[in-house]
Length: 295
Image 1 (cartoon, rainbow, N blue to C red):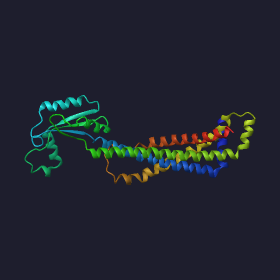
Image 2 (image 1 turned 135 degrees about the horizontal axis):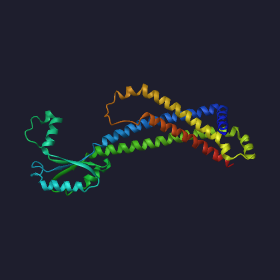
Image 3 (image 1 turned 30 degrees about the vertical axis):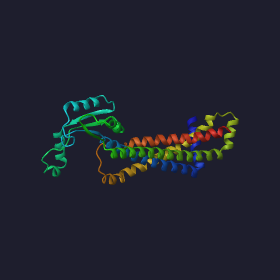
Image 4 (image 1 turned 180 degrees about the horizontal axis):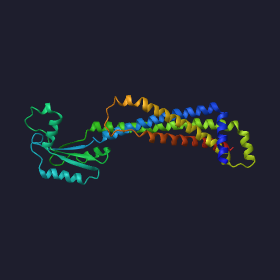
């Protein structure tokens, strides 16, 4: 019975302040819709950066008679192998012989290698780090003086820096944008509840005088905030579903991406939006009610 009373009071308050309630719902709708786009696009881009990070490896190139005047000795190769085995930042590595490197070169650039008589490529270790951020620190362990038999160590410095910078910027934009949208939605719901409280301030004062608890007074307004948030998020999910079905196929048809680059699934995004809208509704209501009940 008490729950029924709370819901009826919440709906009555929303109907009495219809324009304000609609404004709050629309604000949550816009905020959650944009947040949904942020989550979908942000998760896809993060997946893309993770895919690109997989290509960030360290390459330890050994001496050849063309580069150093002599070939690296087996003991020098083994010394580097021992150094890699003892490095906790190294996930795995593989040795690429001169012949293997030449075969790969021939497969990728057949025209370029067709007239080349001698194999100019050096043997190397291809080193995969535990984390893409560690390519630089792994390369730093081979700084001057280089180990005996090693010609150079490369990890695609410019590419690594660009990828890591893009990943950092995207993460920051995603976080800041989400926070701004949530704060804006919370403020609008708080204003809606504030107007509802103002229009019923005498009724609330009478309820307090006859002994009503804070939670008894607070519950209908808390429900009002939750309902505004829920309504806005449900409408946002519907709009996102329409956008996914109507616009996404045409967009993705023009983008070539590997199968491992995926945004978060739509049900996950929808659940996040609904949960966040309920949180926003509760926060907006709670902030306003707490200030009022202290008067």
